[in-house]
Length: 325
Image (cartoon, rainbow, N blue to C red; front, side, top):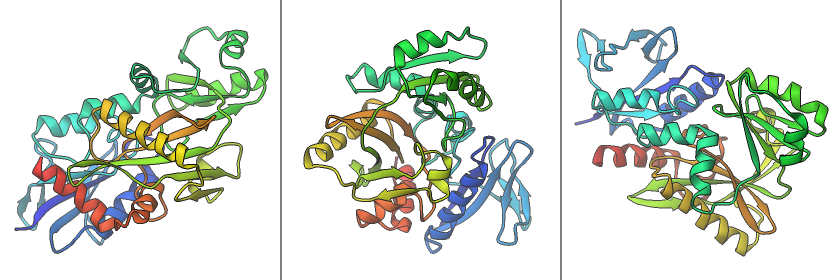
């Protein structure tokens, strides 16, 4: 009997449109002979199922069901394609946990932890994972520019603590750039992170739970035409994403070992894509994305393809692992 799969997309953050693109790709590639798949749009103002004509059917939040042709449809599993809140930060997954509905992401606490850049860095540092030097600020904190420059140096990066897709990130080249960059970051989040600039090759490493084992996918080298891997570079073609990365055997082995270790010490499951920068052949961990882009052009699907894994197989693996868990 076919399983009913809800592909949740949308969300409450700036990443809503990217999430909808990812969700539509999952819907397109999921095996129609094996699954009854439904697109579920989660927005602040509504939770609705969309049919192929974009007719909307309201979700009953008591049990995440809906009515189709006078029949109640119950889901067997949720495929999480929401970047940002509430899918990537654990909120929606805690709700699914309460109503005993399985989903393709890691448990809600792991998702909340990894969405918080500050807490993730604190956790991995305890296991001797190398990271950039950083300072944390909460909205309302006194800003001491001289202290910031003294600790992290210039140039430096100013990032929202809880945001994705490079929204709100700036690179400050001089002290006068820092305050405007802080204001931009505060538009996305009330907590921000200021990090030292690491000069080296940037790579993106996909790690997934594949057929019951932790699998590191082929590594992607990021070459941005812009000053860093910002939104334009990620989504508007202003970068080269080279898979497999042009790195040495030593670098490859080190970053694969580090990425697998980070995935496991954070008790992850499902999808992940983490960013690293090499400094003297040593990989420095930047952040982890637990609902990475899933369009045909996105990095993790590119990596899966390089590993000989089709999108249909990649998505099916996530659902099969969830249903068997």
